[in-house]
Amino acid sequence: MFAHEAWKEVTPELNHEVLEAAYVHDKKLYRRLVQEMAQNLRKRPQMVLEMPRRERHAFFYPLLQLPHFDLHAQNLVIVWLAETQAPMMAAFLDALGIAHDGKGYADGFPEAVDEARLKQAVAGLYEGFPKDAVGLYLRVLDRVSGVEWPGLPALVQAAKA
Image (tube, rainbow, N blue to C red):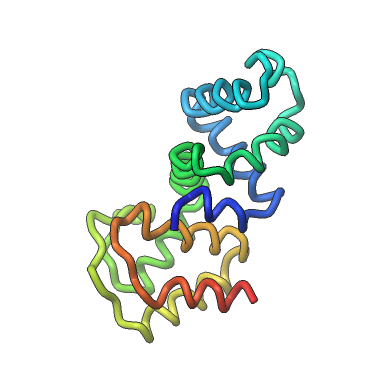
């Protein structure tokens, strides 16, 4: 799933959390985002920066759902995951038996995983972490990892219901 498509499922609160992670941890990414968002909002970047961050992030929310901003949405999710969601990523990889660095970074992903193990890993994430955060992570996992596990979208959809 493309990141901009996954953004449609993001709650306004999670939108703010992800953007806040970029604001704190990746100033360069955040500045580029502000410049492009300002251009699309037909405002000067300085005017956008003068808005309170929560209000600014609310303005960014619908734009990050557009295909034009897919790369930005993907980069924002990656920064958010790397800087704030390491325990969730590590728990998922541990449950699947995928070797990682302890922070949720794997050198590679298998082309296929055992469906029963995947179901158990997904259920464990939804039990131990905020549902909206888990959903966003799992929805963009195939884009970031480069593999697609056929059973994963159905598990995320079932958990959402």
